Image (cartoon, rainbow, N blue to C red; front, side):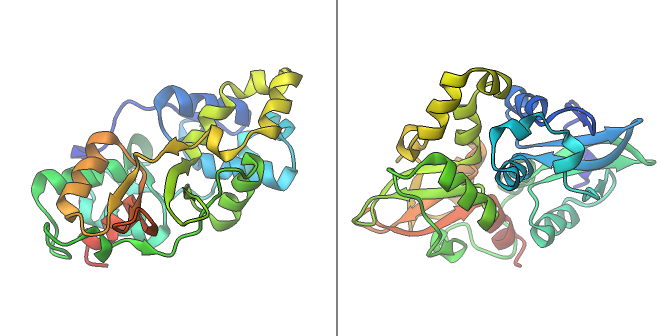
Length: 269
């Protein structure tokens, strides 16, 4: 299948001279983690939540949300042509560790393609050659992932996510049991409107004191390690999960499975 058959043709963009607060707000409006950055109609980069958090960590403060998108965006953007095969797009995402690709044709931006779009197509078209539908999720999961504690300060954990270049951290208790999942989307939702967070001193102080367990998604985002991969794919597509904690029979963490893990397994990489 060609990329043009899977891509979204309705999307928002930002400019290099827009500020990061606006970029985050636009991500919230579109329920997305990335936006194309354009200049005179041409794509010059991509800004993601990860890019924003990394910039905040480097600048040591939320005031840097007033900085321009051009200072934090990833460049050059990884692109895919509208007439490229979806398998090639999947390979590019896996190799480049990205979950979003701007789609171009004749040098112009004509759409965007996400990992969710590719995974949904794999579910509709059947499992790939790399793995059987009945195979357990443990065959593709990442083992022994980094974690967060529920009583940690959110700002400290966000810095760790940036350093690790991850979008999800399982939250575990002292006994190793999974209590929830912290995602970059959870962090964004906690910030709310970043402009108001900057202007409201009380809100800013609340954010600085906020703990992980106040923001995380409770334990619904977890799956047993023997769960068939076909079921897990269906949940990812239907519920739009970005990652799931994988647990043993005692609900203790044994791994994490993300879209990248699934796509790598499906493509046989």
